[in-house]
Picture (tube, rainbow, N blue to C red):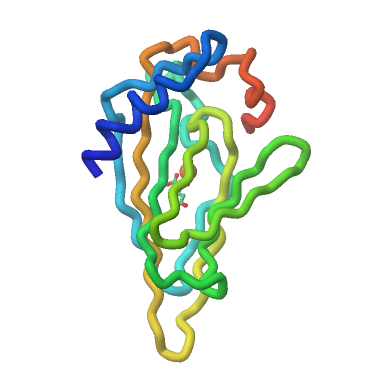
Length: 152
Ligand SMILES: O=C(O)CCC(=O)C(=O)O
Ligand SMILES: [Fe+2]
């Protein structure tokens, strides 16, 4: 995990162009390992950083790594990104897959995990790392093409 935290910001920052320099910080804001058991609750629709600078929250990028090597679609627990024009993108929490999205504007939800099947317990493991920006103008930037995705 520390490898992700140290290598992701420089990797991303090398690839912005002049107009979209999101200046992802080398300082990880926070990280969590979430474990949801079979038949566990999901997350309702939310934005990770809805209040931003009003509460001093500079989180810009949410990076999630899933650790479920034998995941099957019937186990549920998909992350759903709610994009513009009603477009939804489902991300199954399959082991080894990772997803990144803007913490300050992309609404997302997580489907409930299915009840245990044939006596088999299913735990859903997700590591989330939130990366702040060093350029606070990037938080809730109205010029961002994603600005319209924010739910108030
Ligand atoms: O575990 C996931 O797929 C997403 C979790 C999430 O949205 C959150 O912790 O804010
Ligand atoms: Fe979230």
